[in-house]
Amino acid sequence: MTPPRLVRTGVLAAALKVLERDLRLAIRRPGQLLQPLVFFAVVTLLFPLGYTPELDKLRAIAPGVLWVGALLASMLALESLFREDAADGSLEQFLICGQPLVGLVAAKTLAHWLLTGLPLTLMAPLLGIALGVPVGAMPGILSSLALGSVTLSLIGAVGAGLTLGVRRGGVLLSLLTLPLAVPVLIFGARATELAIAGESLTGPLYLLASLGVLGATLAPLAAAAAVRIGLE
Amino acid sequence: MNWAWFHKFGSPPHIYRIAGTLTPWFGWPAGALIVAAAYAGLVLAPPDYQQGDGFRIIYVHAPSAWLSVMIYGVMATAAAIGLIWRMKVAHAAAASCAGIGAWFTGVSLITGMLWGKPMWGTYWVWDPRLTAQLVLLFLYLGYMGLRSGIDDLGRADRASAVLAIVGVVNIPIIRYSVEWWNSIHQAPSVMKMDRPSMPMDMLAPLLMMLLGFTLYFAAVMLVRLRAEILRRERSASWVKEALQ
Amino acid sequence: MSEFFAMGGYAAFLWPAYAITLLAVVVNVIAARRAHAAAREEARRRLETDVDPEREVERER
Image (cartoon, rainbow over all chains, first blue to last red; front, side, top):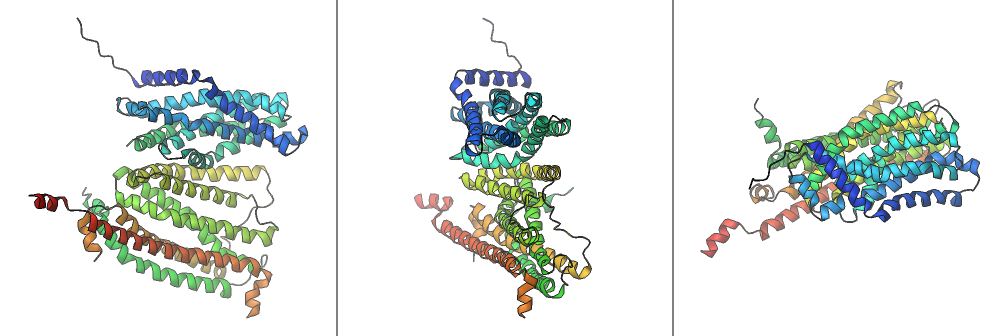
């Protein structure tokens, strides 16, 4: 009988496997996937109730409400980014499997964005309508949130790695991540504001994109370092 | 190149001793400078033609703001050195900075508010400087929160080091985005808190204060450093001697 | 003298500002010294209770 053939797996293939695994695991629990979305909707609902039902006034605060809501909802899902894998030992396997941890962490971050950031982005136009946002603003809202949510997932991954094993780490995770997310919030809300006013939002979009590129290059490194430290 | 001097630098008993010796050399001059600068700023400097005597708050506000930013830089640098070269002393240095930095960030916010109220009528203004200082305070609190949340001291050192480095990379980005945000929204007024065009009799006390506060930070940080070094040293021999 | 303390009408803002700064300066000095004292105490206690492993082996022989 021939011995099994050793296959050299490249980091890309390994990362894709991790991505596929995270997506498959998540789809088995659709309830978990919906929670951030429901949270986003509820938070948005609170503003007309707490402030005013007048659409004109709501439209004025819509950029802030949408972005803060998306930010907080995204934060909810971050806690479980590494927690379950750390608990059942798979994270340790990532560490010792010989593949660069950075690639695997990047794959997990991408999974988080596909499962949380992207759905939140797609839901935003609906909530925007509830806040009196004109239909013409929707492409702008979609593009700015799509870009911004990527950076949010990246920053969040660093926070999630750092708070691995910290008891009641959820609140600490938010405390760590939110100040770092301030630039994304500022540029994103401004882009949304311009979209609502019907003006060109290329300026803030470029800024959001550059934040995304910076995040994509540096955040996985920091997150991998954090995970490594957290598993010692 | 002989790196022995660098690694000797990282030796805990060595640093413990040096820190002890240096502290008074920083502390006493700091005290003298601060007292002298306070006198010069409150008594000798002439009143501002626009803000009258109110501008004298700058002599406590500016040094606090300077410390808040400088200390974060020192903290992040020490943390990076600790992470890269695995030096416990560097991690101890980073830990020594956090509390002082957070305190003076708070003081810069409070003195900023006390300056703003008579000038602009409200205690709080969302101007870029104050807003950035507020975010900086949260960065400090997050750092301290992470440290206290991890039980193992070594892990806490390394995790908070990553956070400090991430934070220091973000600070210029946050400052830029806050200024950008402020300029877009035409916020009520920009607090002109640094006045490089000040005449010398107003500027001199300020420079003295800045130097005095910097030396003060060095002195206090060295005391804390000795405490942090002791906390990280399990091996008895040099500690026994040092405690005699 | 009272003119000095009035600070041209800004006294209510200026003196609290100086006071809080002084407070921060003093508190940090005190806290640092106490931290050092506590660390020395802790180290002393650890030295007394930590058994030297070599001596322990000797005793067992």
